[in-house]
Length: 321
Image 1: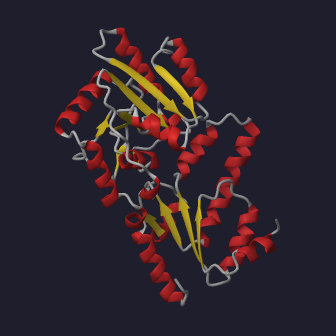
Image 2: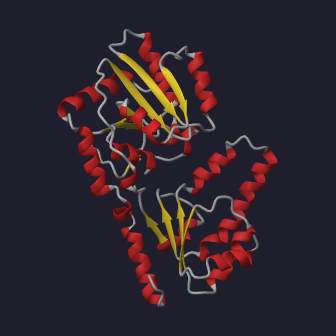
């Protein structure tokens, strides 16, 4: 589709919100250049920090020349890209020499939720075993090799209860995880479910006790963030484990277990003790987590500063909101 046809599609849009440009190219610049001449308010949301995008590109399986060309295009295009936008929405602060000069445009928010689409889990009544769950498009920064290695260490000793890890989803490192499970002879205790949605996914969540957030943020050079999956776990009412600083879940939030931000195996004994203690002190933890999500994690709450800034710009430009 040529530029003119794309322009016709957005001709009646006075406020344009773009989430993640994907692969940047000169075609996009032609569109932004045309829009800049009009009264459009342009907002760019960057769900992934630029340095994480660079790192993922460098670590990809693409050939050397293709990676170099892609990184070169990023460096060239980004130098002028942000000039076209009135608001830049970020999820994690980052030091970036290009973004530094656009500080007045940046609004920091955390991921939010549409709670109406997320069902609270039913409580698993089987206390004889512990089911650990992850739901992700498995990538290096999820760090789920850490829990597999942790289970290997756990089963080398005299385990106090059976622990199972249910890995839901596909992803670039899934084969590596499967190979690790075979290498450590944990096939009995690690189940790969593939992609699951709807009632099938709800059933797996219901049968699980603990979920895994990201355990490998440090592999992308990050210490903190606001991954959507952790918010979904909270809305479902399933306690979870993370290895990063999450601004929506303070230290006082007892339904999160924090582990070191490194590549060490997950200490399964500590996870079990934390969960058992939580279950005794907060037998209705699922309802308590859901209430927290309703009060703190909805998109209405998260987007408020962005909406206020859009209204301010609209008043200045006489744009309808």
